[in-house]
Structures are given as C-alpha cells and as structure tokens.
Image 1 (cartoon, helix red, strand yellow):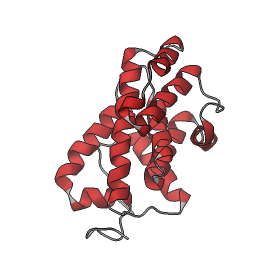
Image 2 (cartoon, one colour):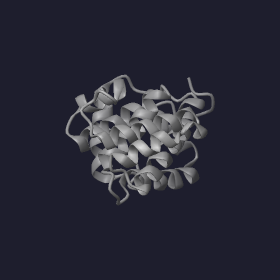
Image 3 (spheres, helix red, strand yellow):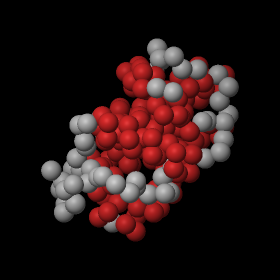
Length: 183
C-alpha cells in the first residue's frame, strides 16, 4: 500500500510520475540519457546494468520493467535471468561481467568500488566512458529503486505487463512518456 496518496491503478514509477509530473520530465530525461546514450555500451547492456542493480536492491518493479527492456534489446529473457542470478556465470562478455561487478560495488556504496575492479574492467576492454556510465547508471538505479520502494508503490505480478512495457520502452525510450493505454 502506498505511503502517500497515489493513483491506486498505476504501479511503480508511473504512479510517482503522475503524482509529481514536474519531476517526471527530468527523471525520464536522465533515464533516457543513461540508458540510450551513444557510446560503446549498447542500450541492452545499459538496461542490464540497471536490472542487475535493481535485483540486488530487491526492487521488483524496476528489475522487472528494465529486465524486460534489456531482454528486448539482448534477444531474450534467459540471459537477463541468468545475469540477475549470477552474472559471473552468465553468457556475457568479460567486459560486461567486469562492469556488472563495478555496478554491484556501487550498489553496496560508492566507496566500495575498488581499483582492482576498475583494472579488471579496463583489461577486459572497458573504456573510461564505459566505467563512468556504469557507475552513474548503478547510482541512478539505487535512487530510482529507493524512490519506487520508499513510497510503497506496487508492482504488477503479471509478467506480460513488463513484457508489453519493455517492448514499448525499447522502441520509444523514456522521453516519450508512458504508453497510451493500460496502467
């Protein structure tokens, strides 16, 4: 049950964006830049970083919605599920595993990022921009997760909800706003 007066029919971030639309625009713009920016990390890899951090934070809504977007970009749900369970044994590149290790350290706290983790990422081919973006995505998702869960929003149990939203977000990004129909 939400801790404040949110529209009961809207889940997660959608309820919060409706409650305070003046923050929705900047938060969506940030998500769009972080998750769909040009660079050497693909949109799917960026979404996977957010998904894994959200799973570590036990934020069902965020790990499900961003996992669905990652699955759309990366070609399937199995990879996303494997990465959430144990990214070190998932069929990911060494670079991605190293970046997810850094993201996990950020999730624990910014000062938990070690020089060894950064060196591992660099030796696997990560650029300074990759490392920067990984840390920023992980930090932003900690904020998003705490925002969604801290105000007691609800998360749909129907996985098809996330698949539908994931497809929409994979195609349209975050600046377009929510899809026109359904909660």
